[in-house]
Image 1: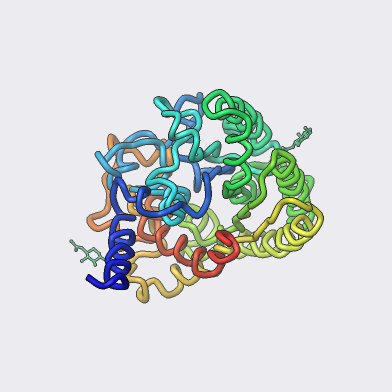
Image 2 (image 1 turned 90 degrees about the vertical axis):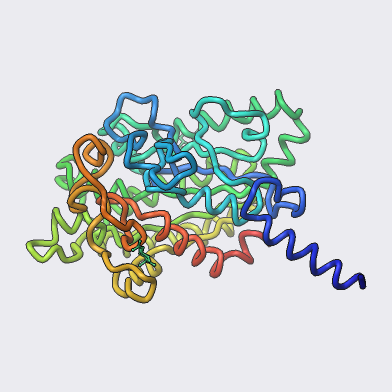
Length: 356
Ligand SMILES: *[C@@H]1O[C@H](CO)[C@@H](O)[C@H](O)[C@H]1NC(C)=O
Ligand SMILES: *[C@@H]1O[C@H](CO)[C@@H](O)[C@H](O)[C@H]1NC(C)=O
């Protein structure tokens, strides 16, 4: 066997084995760990033990996960942080920090501190009794102490140094706090509320950077007016996209990109990259056919128009016949199949910067 053939066989083996247990021995991961902060898009179950209605640890959530287990992930299967950890060769699932049974190995390769329905507005987590971003940082500090206990100070510094941090929040501020409760809309118009969110996000980024993060992917806002529940609330009988929420999301994305560019320049040791997801989600909903989605405006759970968290519960509602045809699993969160397309788009557009 000639060496090039052997080499290419090894490469094939490494590629094939990214799908299954044991692949990490073939391939050096591109980062040391993945560490996530934010809301339900990246929460693998941190709300499970809280006294809140915002939970997904009951069927039909997780119905397509290994063992069909309702772990607390807000989808039928994997969520973006799992797919990111897989793509980077780190591990198959990014666990919840507050989950039970985390092994030392799980801790060493990263966790998620995210909490469904939290946001950059300090009022957002308070309204629904979930974990604020400030508290997520306090948990990170505790987590760092555990890493030191397991691996020592030098190795901990190396892990943090080589980790990809993911920050994903803001949607619940707009959809829930601003447009559904009266608390902020009485005092703030959309531009001033967006400034409040950008200020909170900036403070949070600086706090993450000061903890030694060198690489932060900052996820932008989706077209929040087009998610099924917001179409139901504000889209009239035709359930059109609700324009004011999309206007808020676009303004937020524009302002956040400026803030992220400034932070990237000012923070000498931290690279911050804005990850746009508005465009790909808009495309999934506008041109679903192109991706094999025949249902883009209703979730798979129940009627698909309102059911989310406590209302999306197998005891009360049924699920659609073919979840692969749906962009959304419940009235708010994408299906695993849609998440895969979104994460692929992120790596196509930003993979070089995130890994390089
Ligand atoms: C950032 O850190 C400061 C100082 O510790 C703290 O007062 C503030 O609440 C933190 N903000 C966020 C959003 O983490
Ligand atoms: C489910 O939908 C997907 C995507 O449209 C399609 O490829 C698949 O064949 C469907 N499965 C069944 C059982 O109908």
